[in-house]
Each structure stands twice: as structure tokens, then as C-alpha cells.
Amino acid sequence: MDSRDDNDFTPLAYAVANPSVAVELLSMLIEAGADVNASVDQGKKYPLGLAACSGNVEATEFLLDTGASVNAKSPAGYTALIETIYRLHNSESLLPIIDLLVHWGADLDCQTDFGELPVTVASRLGRFDAVCLLLNAGAEGAPLNWSELARAVAIGSDDDVAHVLSSTGLESEWDRFGRTPGLLAATVGSIAKGQLLAAYGWNVNEKGRNEETAVMCCASANHVAMMAWLLDKGAEVDAVDDSMNTALILAAQNGSADCVRLLLDAGANTKVRNEYEDTAIEVASTTQVVRFLQIAGEDVGMISQEMKREFTGLSKYEFLKCHPKEYEAGKRPRYGNANPERMDIEFWRAMIRAGCSAYEARAQFGDTNNLSEPVWCFSRFGCSFTELPDGRIVQIAGEHEDYYDPDFCIYNDVIVHEARDEFSIYGYPSELFRPTDFHTATYADGYIFIVGCLGYQGTRDFGMTPIYRLSCSDWSIEVVTTSGDAPGWIYEHRACITGPNVLCISGGKVAVVRNGEETHEDLERDYMLDLTTMTWK
Image (tube, rainbow, N blue to C red; front, top):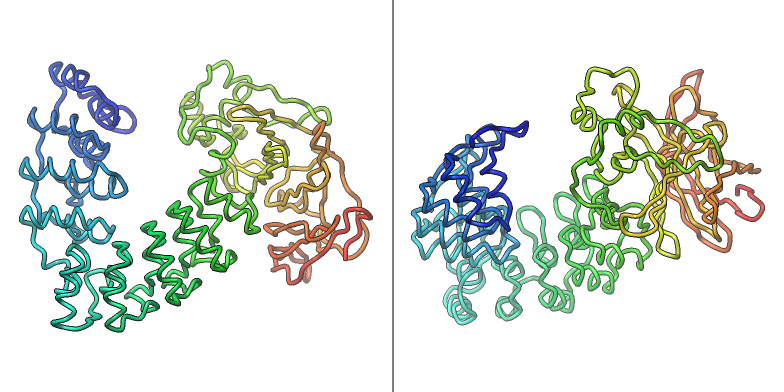
């Protein structure tokens, strides 16, 4: 019953991690000898913590009833209580689970090796209802570093705030996380408390220790009405924090669609990049947020890999379902023999559905010693993503891993997603469509124009720009010959239609030869390609 798999998980650990697990199954496992206090994942997790983090109150209580230690700690000092606050901070299940753990004697002031306590974690994540529950149960409040006004704003009533203000006036001291009372009001989402603070001179554009503003606090917590009130009071739309995040980036990342729409209506700049060079659409976490940003002019091809799988109807997580014979028959990449050749290879289709790496496929089929050739994979970088007017999505080529990895491969295939979990794979001769990555793929009048490529070392034609035209009716591809001043061997650039039959290329890199050495430089200016005459301007 306590046997381990490659992830160091027991059957009981897997069972309790399932939020829908039946208590009858847990009872059967424990009666058969499963240890409710057996740590898993190299000692980092316990069954109780897994059950609590799943949000299943009944399963959590059952484990406690059968002897699970409520205060078991990971090597870094994390208990079920702290783990639950982290995992369920956006869930309605948080308070019932906390209440249950407290009832069973959870240590309210336990501290991790990083100085985190239950109340401080709940406060940082904006779950002041959980903070209130913990304080009422006896947790120490001093670590929050709350002034009387900050406490009133965070967990008190409007009358409490008014009373403190009348006694002490407006205080701007920071709490443990560098938040002023005004920022706490925004995090709570209380317009009434904001109005009380404003009456005493609160500046709605003040910043916290991390340079965050009240509008950013609303974006992270999805407080639309409070954000609208702040904007009406003159709050800045495009202020940045110390990580160069704007409120729009934070709202997109948080999946706060209504906040995203409000910020866009207020003129938020969609082009701002944070310290990781991500724009709002690149961190967008829901399809609705992506659609709002797309309407605002952003390229849907820039969304994250997770969002691409959601858009194409592929599961976020799926095991590789493939017979060993199918793996052996289809594991190697190969080019098509026609223009196009439909590649009905079961292993390839299974890899697209699973989204796993080539190494994971090798490991599943015991093929980790045969590294002379790469294994076909759809977990790729530099793979374009183009949405057609009829809703179909086309993903083109891309690369897996870096050049030194045994599974490094640059592909030249086209995957057409017709509907959720319905797709076709097309292959092409390499002499017709070279292995391509970090290109752009722009739709225009029934065709996708594929521009640029990094490609394999030694195959780059410096000075020319590779361009292909892919038919969206029969998926045939052709090389496009152009005239005029081409940008050169470009990659990681951007492309968009800027006028009737005009494709604009901007940004990215260009590979050139200087003094006999290959070098890669920034593309300094924009280039226009007339799609009627195929002339660069």
C-alpha cells in the first residue's frame, strides 16, 4: 500500500490529491495498510496537505479522523495549513479547510524556513477573511505590521475606518508587504473605505514598497468597481511597478477579464513589456482576456503555450497514450514526400495530444539509451500560431530543444486544428519547405505568408529573406520570390497587415556576416512587403 512510483507518490497520495475522491476509497486504502503520515515527493508533501490543498473537506476530515498529523512539516517547514492558503487562495474552499485544520489543532504561528506564517501568507495573497479567521482563533497579529488604520481597512468595518481616521488622521505607514492603508483598501476592493481615505487626503496614485499602485492591487484581485472608481479619481492607467508590470499585465495574468476590458477602455498601453519582456497578451490566462486584447490589436500568436493548447482544444495535461509498436513505427521525424503529404502517424498524434517532451516519450518506452536520432515532438519553441477567419488554427514548424540535445530538431510540418481535439498533420519535402523556426505566419486572402527563419547552423542564406505562401484550402506550399530591399535572414520578428495587401515586418533579429564571422543584430527598421507585387519597400 505504500509502494512508490517514479514521482515518489503512494496510491493514497494520488487518491487524496483528487478533489473528487470518495471517502470509501480512502477507507479501503487505509484499512489495507496505507500510512496516512507517509511523506511523498521526497518528503515535501503529506497526504493531509494534499487532501487539504484539493479543497475536499470530507477527505481532509477523514484523514484527520484516522490519525493524520495536522502539524507535519516539509523539510522547508511548510504545514498543511500554509500549503492550503497558498493553493486555495482563489477558492471558496479555503475558509472551510482552514476552519477544519484549526479545529484539529493546527499550529497558527508555525513558520517556514523563509519566515512565512499562516497570517502573513493569507495577508500577502489578499485573503483578509482568512487572516480574520486566524486572528480570531488566536494567531499572533504582530507579524502583519498593521497600524490601527491598516487593520481597520483590511478587516474592520467602514465605521471602524471612519473612527480611526477621526482620531489619528491618515497614516501612510507600510505593512509587512509594503502596502499603505490606501493600497489595502484597493486590495479589499472597498470603494467606501477608499472614499473615507480620500476625504483625508489619500493620493490614489501613491505607490507601495514594490512600486505597486491601487489600480494594480485591483487588477490582481479582480475588483472592477473599485478600479473604475480609482480611474475616475485620476489614477494612472499605465504606471509600472518595480518589475515593470502595468495594471493591464497583472489583470491579464490574473485572468481578470472585466478589469482588462476596463483598462483597455481607459486607454491602457498593450505594448508595455515587463522585466521578463512579456506583454499582456503573452501572460493572458483566459480565452476571454485574449479576445479582449486581440480586439485591441494584439497578435493571438503571442499567447502562452498553455493558452495555445486551450485554444486548440487540447488538454492541459494528458498522459501519452500510445502503443509501443506505434512508438517504434513513428518515433523518428521525417519529411513529407508530396505537397502536402498527410502524416497519419499515430505516435505523432499522441504526442500532440499529450504535449510532452521527447525525453518523456523515450522514458515511457524505455528508449533513453538510443540517442543517435531525435524523437518526434510537438513541444516546441518558435512554432507559429495563426487563427483563420473560420476559426481554424494553424501551427507551423518550430524546434524542440537546443542544438546540443539529442532530440534537437527543427521541423517543417503544418498542424491544422479544425475543431476541439480534431487536427491534421501535413509534411513537405525539405527542398520545398526548409526546416523553419522563429518565423511569422500571417493570414491574408486565403493564404498564410511564412516569413523568416533561424534554421540550422550552416544553412542560412545571408542577405535573403525566406518567404513561403501556404494555401489554406489544400495546404500546398510554395516558395515566394521577392524583389527590392529585403530585410535579410530575419527571425524572432513581428509581422502584421498594415494596409491593403501590405505586410509590415518589424523588430527581431537578422543574421549577417561581418568580417567573415556570422553575427546576429537587431533589425533596426520596419520593412513593408507588397503582397500583390512581392516587392520590399
